[in-house]
Length: 206
Ligand code: UP5
Ligand code: MG
Image (cartoon, rainbow, N blue to C red):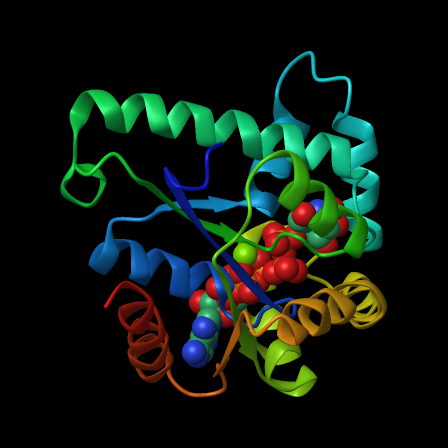
């Protein structure tokens, strides 16, 4: 993608930090296309005939990272589809021909970050939702009562925290050194966090 034509914001933060919840709210205000890498992987896992189903299922349950080729391809396809759809419907935020994407839960490892920046599109910034493991654990266990997600159990959650610290924190550090990271404390209520996140996005588009 020509990055003069698309704006990409990465949304990062630990498991249960509130990435998905906050992206859904930002979409209402700013007409972004929200792409969750985790949701795309879960959809691919359940797609009939997918050759990656078992691989994705195992990685998600073990809290490890799916090989980047799979995730990058899914993201690229979803971006292309969204550009096509919006070109024909022409919703407000996209009228100037610029696609706007919130990419949620990606890149979570350095190799993915470098590859996506080089081959798909450079990101403009990173919104980093930060809170404590205690808060995240509480939210995930609560959600686990009804989510049906195979990784919302104590065992998987611990593994997800481990991968987050070893693989994803370095990515946040990397973009932070480039001055691209806006950290938003996501410990408060959904409304409070949304206010802070909106302010960050507003500043970018101001
Ligand atoms: N909630 C949210 N905000 C709240 C608030 N302020 N106050 C109170 N409650 C709040 O929120 C989690 C729960 O908390 C919800 O019930 C919500 O109502 C509540 P959510 O918005 O879903 O948090 P989010 O950060 O999106 O948590 P999620 O579990 O989706 O994060 P993960 O990063 O763990 O999951 P993801 O789907 O991104 O990835 C899953 C797996 O896919 C990974 O572990 C990995 O195996 C694989 N993956 C890859 O391999 N590669 C990728 O690039 C991406 C994923
Ligand atoms: Mg999510």
